[in-house]
Each structure stands twice: as C-alpha cells, then as structure tokens.
Image 1 (cartoon, one colour):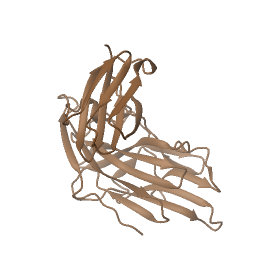
Image 2 (tube, helix red, strand yellow; image 1 turned 90 degrees about the vertical axis):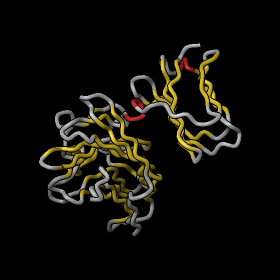
Image 3 (cartoon, one colour; image 1 turned 120 degrees about the horizontal axis):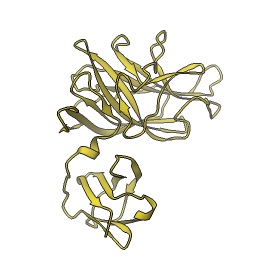
Image 4 (cartoon, helix red, strand yellow; image 1 turned 120 degrees about the vertical axis):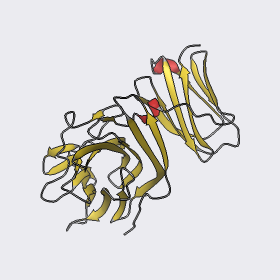
Length: 273
C-alpha cells in the first residue's frame, strides 16, 4: 500500500475575487496515479495539516477477482461530505463540470454511505461499468467536497481523472476560505491574474488561435477555456507552436493555461483578428 500525502509539494494562489466570493484558495501538487490494488492518496483539502479524505483504487478484487473499484472516504464522517447521491446499490460521488456551483443548496450531499462511510467514484465488474456511474466514460471531472469547521461549512473541489476504472489520477484541489460560501468547480483559472512566462505568447490571426514558445520548452499540460469558464480543449503541448481554428469554439475570449517545468503561463486572448 502506498501512502501519498500533500505536504510540501504544492503552490497556493490566494485569489481575491469579490467581497461576496471572498477568497478562493487553489492548491496544485504533482499528479498522483493510483493503479495498483490498494493504492491510496490522502487529501488535506484546506491545508490545515488535518487529513480530510482518502482516495483508494482497488484492482481485480472480490471473490471473483473481477472487480475494479475507485472510492473516496472521509477521515471524519461526522463532519465531512461528498457531493453525490445513491444510485442503484452504491452511493456515488457526482462528476461536476467546470463552473458548476458547490454549495449547501445547489448539490445533493449523499455521496457517501452513512453506514459504510465511503463514496463510490467508479465500479466495474469484468471490465463493465456500473450503469449509474458518471465516470464510466473516462476523462476528467471535479468532485465537490464539504467540511464542517467551527460550526460552519467549508466548500471545495478536487479534480480527478478516471481511466477505464483501472486508474484514478488526483490532480489538484481548491476551497473557499470564507465559511458558508459557495465555490465554482474548477473556476479558479478564470479569475486568476495573467502570468507571463518568458518567450510565451498567444494571438489570433487568420481565424486561428496561435500559441508559441521557445523551442527548448518542456512538455506543458495546456487547457483553453472560454469566457464562461468552460473547458474547450486540453492536452500536452509538445512543440514550440500550436494553432487551433477558433470557428470550432465560437468564443470571443480564450484563456490559455499552460503548466510545465518552466513555470505557469496564463493569458487571456481576444478571439478576433
């Protein structure tokens, strides 16, 4: 069993949005892949040194040896909750899209069984997903999380990726530091100030979104959002130039986020020539 915790390897951006939204706190850490039976990852959502949730990947388990099961469970089930509901035989963690509100009223908070104290992310038997899982089509999404702090509620999210029910990748998280206040899933990059990186630039020309950077740049995990915070496309930027036809996206603004060993580049690009 592998113990993986968030302690020193993170970057914190404290974002002052508005007086209503108060402060979003974003925590980035190296992507952690759980793929061996029993692999787990411990998450301290709000960086107070108290572990809040554990993610576990089970592989080829059960009496048949044919079950793959990804779960999330709280360290304190009396004060923590997962956005989701019971569907079929399991209590499922809902898959949220970028921009979805996480709050007391906007989400169901039955994503964990009250008797077994865990929530199912993905469940597969003999390589076939349970029909009630929202993660069976693979890909990335957000799980809404809630903590009880000082008789108030703290809301946050964790971004994960599920691959064929066999791998669970935990990528980053964020929380709303103002208690009893909502947070939007994955919405931090939309409000984050631009970050410049030497030699990186983006512009629109001839109906194309053009991105360029130095030829010796490292592989960059790159995401492009529209003005509503919706993810348009994401992938690994390998070369020094990348171009995309903007007609596919019908957006008047593009927010480019590229993360690599060279640093983080965030730029807003107006979608007209």
